[in-house]
Length: 263
Image (cartoon, rainbow, N blue to C red):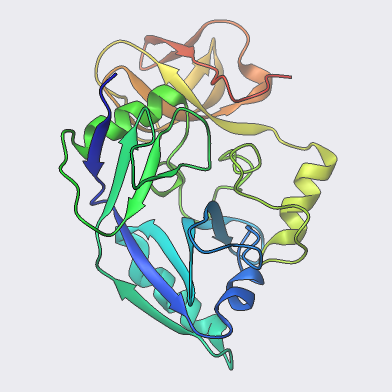
């Protein structure tokens, strides 16, 4: 089996270092940072105080802090947000221009397994790798595994992390205690009040435009988010998935990921 390697130019790095780096991030992010060992890779997010998704990110433990893997076009905004929260914390927050690589379907030597779901492959931060695939190839693989890309798929400030499946993709540690937006997130999980989720859909032809309505007969069942020819992510109402779905007059099939419990 061929292992594919692609450089992810849509992602960028932020280095958070200093004696307070871990407790500083631990109190902000959905993921446990206190126990993040050097070399560990975890998935998480920074939410708004009302619990909406602002930034998805990967966290890699380093000897003197944490490396954050974020959307490249959102890096400056996250730098500003972290500076706002920093106050008296003894931390240094700075951009790092090292490259980011992904490999799939196997985890190649020098890569760390993607913590979201098996089958995604691995990630590597820094160094040089000989690539044999493009980022578009990687995004096609991600869609096939059924994992949404919140940076591309989630309308900013409108999506709850559970709607983007963070609770199913190891992106929220509900045992860690407080984080920004924790109250709303925990209440949604505890009460089971999850009405919408991002799910992969399949169709013929080019992807519908962002925001195109998915219909179940005359009823609105959701909206299309990011995608490619034949496949996309959609934010769908879970109570309107039975029956024939369509978008722009084309039949649509929900492709339930193997890692998602349909009950």
